Length: 238
Image 1: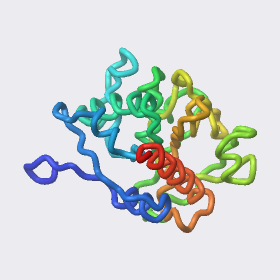
Image 2: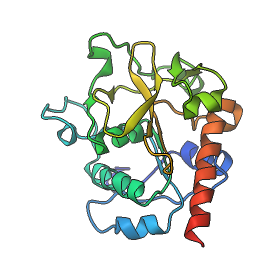
Image 3: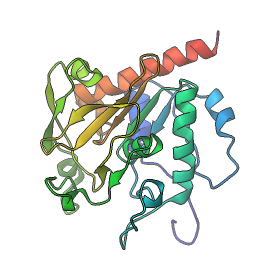
């Protein structure tokens, strides 16, 4: 809500990263309780970016535990994205998922989440300090170890890299057909890809859209997504 009216909105940083990082044209998809023909929509798209959000997935989608007081939810987004993801995979539409989108991929594939990572035994606090300016909140916060021979190791040219950390929730049980591409020092999964050679799906718990052109590793992620989108466009236009 913005004032008394419902609004559909997305952070400009994601739109800018699609333009400048992936060299693609962004098109915003509304989250609706009903009315969207997701199959027809995907037939006209060359890629799908699932961005972060202040809201979290309602826990009934992945467990029987109750939500906690003050937890922000967006049922319309849950309904939209949790149905979009398997359809995108089936149609081989490239997917790049960030933060909430990362968690949506895991839940859509049958996985579960920690509602409060900082309260889970053995896991550290991954949340940002909201009292700090954005450049501090989005600054590198901790290293992640990258899967040997994986996509991210190739993008980084190294077996570990520093990433930012701005999330309260995270993966508990990994979803089916997902491969962990990056791990935080506490063992939390920070990135996954689909275990399928001919379908691009990469999901990241951190925020590579932040000043994407100034971070070579983040830029490589968006370039790879853009290349997958262009390959999809070529297949679609044959």
